[in-house]
Length: 245
Image: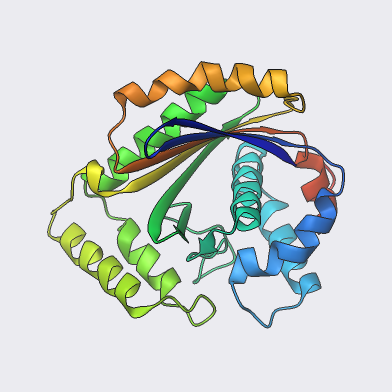
């Protein structure tokens, strides 16, 4: 897993990542329990079975979405972002609903959204992820993403601090009342994954960066981090949990 970070302007960053199969299963083994369930007593083999049971009957679209999101969590943890979310749903053996991720880094609270595909561009998937974030943050639906974020952060295996929980609960209560803060109040992280794409070279990473850097002109945010991922480790994840690609 290699990456390059590009500073576009103050508070706006792009990261281009290449995920290949070399050593990635070792990284998965070291982090999969904490990504899925936080500081949990669950053992590795149980987590693998849970994920296998969930993904085995699913089609390729859901599999890709879940695996793309997992690698984003794996990458953010490697940079030192503190996870305030669980990959798995609290109520059932499935991937959680609401925001794809909620992280703390250098005092900032980051909201993550992941979109993926195999015949798409990084730019289109990042724009799709941003659009999803915008909809979740500015309109009301039956699924309250802030309540979901609160429930995950409040879980004992996450151990979020009281000010974070208070903020999430306030945002959740306001969401019920159809009260929404402007997007300029949030640090947003739209992520676009393209499977079976090789971005191992710096030249390709630079090309991807040049294709996404101007996308910020149409976005609103407090801070923004766009992440473009080329993922060649789809099969490696499935094999790790005991599934054939």
